[in-house]
Amino acid sequence: MKMRTNSAAGASRRTVLVGLVVVLSTGLVGRTRAEEPEPSYKRTLETYVVPDVTLVNHEGARVRLREYLDTGRPVVLDFFFTTCTTICPVLSASFIGLQKSFGSETQQALLVSIAIDPEHDAPAVLQGYRRRFGAQPGWDLLTGSRDEVEQVRKAFGAYTTDKMAHRPLNFLHLPGGAGWVRLDGL
Image (cartoon, one colour):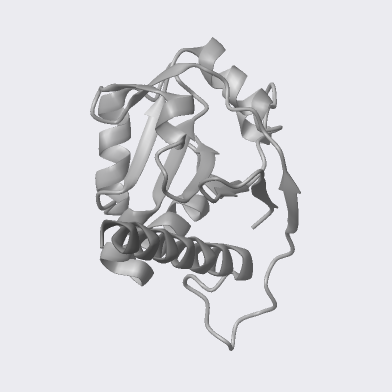
C-alpha cells in the first residue's frame, strides 16, 4: 500500500510538472485567444550542475541549494531582482498564474526565484515582494552573497555582468531526470 501511495504521488508530481511546462512554454497564463501571437522563446534540454552553495530564503532561513532543489518534487526556477520594472514582474506574474491555475496542486512542485541583486534584495525585501504579488506557499525567493548568486547564475548559463541585461529564463526539472528544460524568452 505504501508503495502505491509513493507511486501515485510521483505520478501526480509528474502531472503537475507537465502542466507547469505546458503553461510556461505556451504562455497560457493571462492570455486570451484574441491577443497577438505569443512572444517567441527557445526551449532546450540542458544539463546543469547545481553548485553547493548556501542561500537564504525570504524568511531568513539558510538553505543548501543543491539539497533544496533535490527534494523529490518538480522544480521551476528563475532569476529576478525586486527593483526590476521590465521582465521580472512578468516572470513573477507567471509564477502567480501557475499558483492560481494549479491551486493546492502547485505545492507538489517547488517554485524558486533567485535574486540577482543580493545587496538590495535582503529577506525582508523579498517578503515585501511576495506580498506585492500575492504569493502563496510553495514559491520561495532566495538570496545570498554576490559570489554565491553568481556561482548559481554561471552554473545555469544565466550570468550577465549587468543585472539590467539579464534574460527572461525559466528552468524546469523533474526529480530523477537527467536534465533541465530551459525556456529562454517570454
